[in-house]
Length: 502
Image (tube, rainbow, N blue to C red; front, top):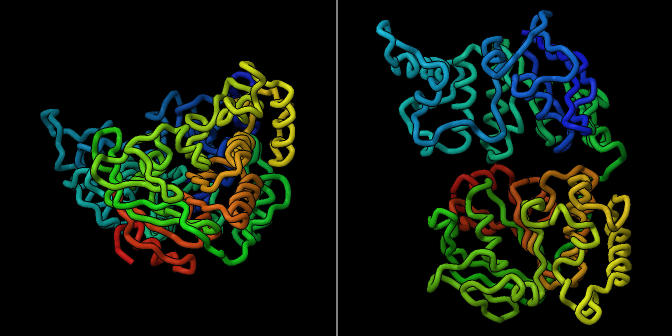
């Protein structure tokens, strides 16, 4: 089926998320929609899928104009979508999830799950998915859950399949398997829209590439085009995608984790017996698929979440922390923290840039005058940090929530590094930022290491881990399955991320 979008425009108040976008996807083609987070890719696909209504423009399938009032209309027309966050019910079986919303019935009008099971088996066998229709979704690995989402779309005879950031939660092996599935689907005539910001995957699987920046199509490209050319189209300027760093020269131990255990929000053990040492002048990267205890580990290191009593300890510069120290106590020990969710934990959106830059140290003498804030000092320090960290803001008094994602992250990085820390914990430091900001943030992390600081990098981006790490600890289901050098192959790291010990 041929898909054509003509002049699609979608506004949210004053924000133009999609600005007269044209896109054509031919039958049996894998068409990559490439752009940074916030570029408008997902909004465009939500318009296509009937979740949003376009303010202007047309959707055509096989040259016929379509009018969708909701996802049901889009599915009926042959469009399927696998969302970045899966839309499955964990306690249902595969067959029950596939049947949901399109329930097969018997002659008497009762639910006929046998038909749904047969449909799952038929599609699974046709494409080699190897999915058990009777398995509970909550028991399946993430990669298999994604196959269930694809089966669900294909069971409704989808001729156009939209995959929204489909590799975000996959191991390298699962990513390779998904790409093989995509090629097989395309070969069978399915048109695929592949939404992503990962250049390597685009070059590997796409037939054609459309690049979106700030809600507009800025150009088309071929997989044969260089990675640097694609990156430049995404951000509008030349960027250096390589990370230059000398060999590490580790010094004294800065932090030591001794068999720590941490509970998650459901009182389930998320971190299980983790022991690590990190030294001055090195970057230890903790790699793994999201949801394997990394978030809880980072929060425990900062004092945001307690270590289970009697089950492990944390020592910073040979000083043991209490079971649940205050965050200020940890920060005062020379720890900087870049949280994985800058909007929730890193910034106060309603505060100015200058106010956000002083959050960690607002009580210290450099920001105070008697019992009041030293506004002139705050202004001077903010101006210096905005310049040093290349924060693109109208002024220091602009609201942090109005900045782009990359500039918001630079504010967080600037604040944490201003304090001259001994240990930097950087959790997903480049999530949701543009390629240019990634380049800058990576430079700052390496600079901290070269200045003799210890760095713990927690990242689900394998390219980032390999580029920055001096050592890599791989985490799976709350445990460290091995610590390896950055020369370790992607294949081996992928196996470890799936739970195979080094």
